[in-house]
Structures are given as structure tokens and as C-alpha cells.
Image (cartoon, rainbow, N blue to C red):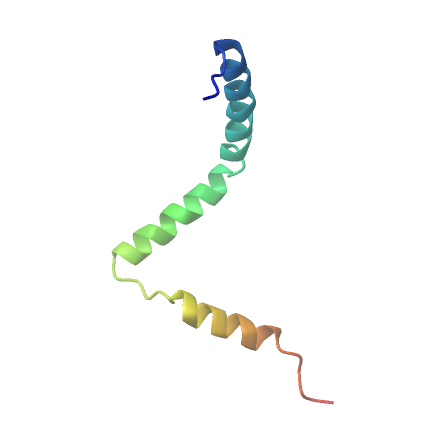
Length: 68
């Protein structure tokens, strides 16, 4: 059985805590507001597209044009 001393545990935690804080700060207030708006739209019966349909639409858009 391996045991980590408190000093090492605290050092590892400090490293991970910095990474977590950096990731959390990645969303702007504007982006969060847009997500809130979309959630409200959905909760009020707004039409949504499921993942399968979204992927179909994306593939269709990304297909090269067959016109010459």
C-alpha cells in the first residue's frame, strides 16, 4: 500500500485547483447568457434538434458541392 504525505497531497491539489479555475473562467458572461437564453427557449416549448438530426445537417453542409 502506498501512502502520500500531506505535503505532496497539498501540492498535487494546488496544481489541479489551478487547472480547474482556468477551465471555469473559459466562459464569458455573454456565452453564459446565450446558454441561459437557449435553455429558457427549450423550457418554454421551443423547437430543438436532437444530436442525430444535428449531425445529419452538419454532414450535409460539409459535403463538397457536386456542381462543376
